[in-house]
Length: 339
Image (cartoon, rainbow, N blue to C red; front, side, top):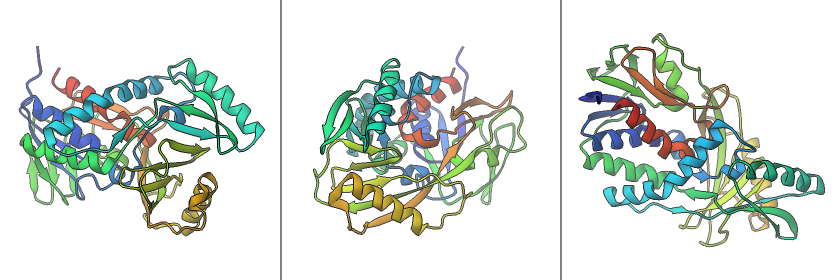
C-alpha cells in the first residue's frame, strides 16, 4: 500500500531539495520548500558541475555504483526537466582528459584506470600536448546554475511553495518546522540542507552521521567559447568550459568550518595549477573567484532515509558529488517517501 503524504516540508532548496520537491509534486504532494538564503545559492551555486566518475572513483565501491547509475539517468533527467521548465540546460557528455606530468604519474594512472575498468569506468590511452594521458569518454558536465533555474521553474509550475531567506530554528519528530515566520505543519519533513543538515537534525531520534563542511575555492575566466571541449584534469585540479565561454578551474579542499573568507593563497595556487594545465591561462587574472561548502560525512556515503520512526527524512552528505548523484538521490527519495 502506498504511503499517503498530503504535505511535506523540505528544508534546504539546493538542487537535491528542489529536485525532490519537483518529483514529489509530480506525485500530487503539496510541497513547501524552505531555504535560509535564495534557493540554490550554497553548494549548488558554487559547484563546477562535473559529472565525472573517472576523476572521483578509483575502483569498485557502493558509492561508485550509485554514481554510475545516476550518470546513466542524467540524459533523461535533463530532457524531462527542460520540457517541464522551458529552461535550456548546458549539459554535455564531453569526456575528460587526465594528464600525467611524469613517468611516475603515468604509471600510477595506468594502474588506477585498470581498477576503474573493473567497475564500469572506461578510459583509453592518449597524448595531450605531448604528455601521456587517459581519455574518459563517459565523463560529462552540467551547469548547476542552469539546473537550479530549471528546477525552480519546474517547481513553480507544479505548485511548489518556496520560502526563501527564512532560517529554520527547530524541526520536531512529528514533521513540524519552526521558522521566524511561524510553525509549518506537514505529514513529514525532508532535510536536504547540505553542510548544515546535521545541525538541523540535532536532538531528533535515529542514527544519522554528522556532517563536516569542507570549503572549496573555484575561479573562472570569461573567454571565447570552444577553447576546450573535454574536461581537463591533473591530480586535484580540473578545468571545464561552459558553452557561454566561461572557463572554470577547481578546486581546493579546506577544513575551516563555515568561514566564507576568500583565501588569496588558495586562489593563487589554483590559478597557477590551471595555467600549467592550460598555458593560455598563464598570467590571466580570473574574472570570478568564489568558494562554497561541501557536505562531508565519514565514509563519504550520503545519508538518504528516515530518521528512526519519526516523520523526518534526510538526504545529505554528497560531498564532492552532489550534482552527479542528484538524479539517483531525487528518484530514490521520492520513491521511499511515497512507498
